[in-house]
Length: 268
DNA sequence: CTCCTATCTCGTCAGGTGTA
DNA sequence: TACACCTGACGAGATAGGAG
Image (cartoon, rainbow, N blue to C red; front, side, top):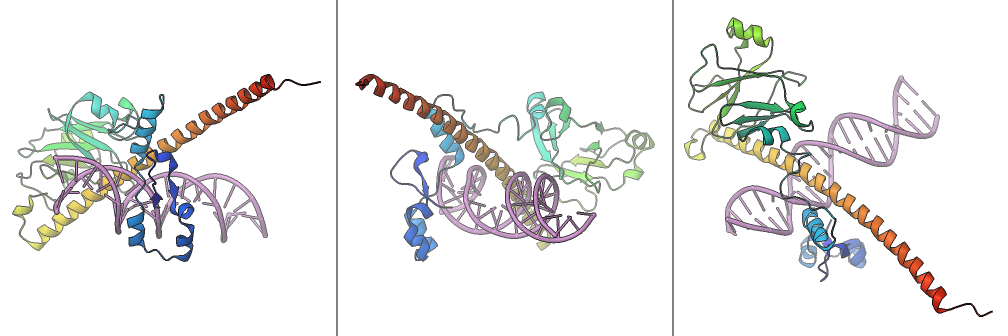
């Protein structure tokens, strides 16, 4: 949707092209390129709402950062400053704090309730630099997907049954994950992020491209969610503004009627 | 119960916008 | 100017509600 923005600064007075350029729209004469020269895009919801809120006291602003109700789970933000945050394929967040503390939370759940039961062990002589993370997978097939930066790698342990007996007893059939530095010897099937300069083979290039695409899609996914949240907030703001203006309008009409009665007394 | 339709939500793509 | 971000558009899947 393209919005015709006249010289008015207020975003309230925008109108669709169908409303402002009906003839051109009906004839289909103006192609998209020409239309883009004429029209400018509607400002973002955040911008519009912030503009409103600066004019109208009491209208909440859309914050630059994510609100507490969505986005990064609050328990992660408040309990420790994580150095890395991962998201699983089921939407859970995994935060790794400075001291190696690992927190798992569900988005949408609040506070501590979002914490997953988590078993973390370094016993059983793990490989150098490795931290083993275990938790109950919630997806139907039991598989979890991690998005990791290039500095670290998360590996699902394909040798769970070979784990030490004390570990197996503690975890049952839970899958095991390892968070390792890329320098650590990696098991088969590990996708390790490397700097572009170190890529040589077509396979590595393809893996890098895939990783970049996954990262881009994930970011865009989150951006779309955030955008929809802002849009809902914007619509709510508009609705409340309509309600306020209706009340004002009603009061003004009543006031006008009163003044009319005063200024024009009945002549019987 | 099954089918159809409307509505909603979500992920993805494309392209505009903002900024360093 | 490159890059990250934002958002409209679109399609797919889920869900609700009504009709037969």
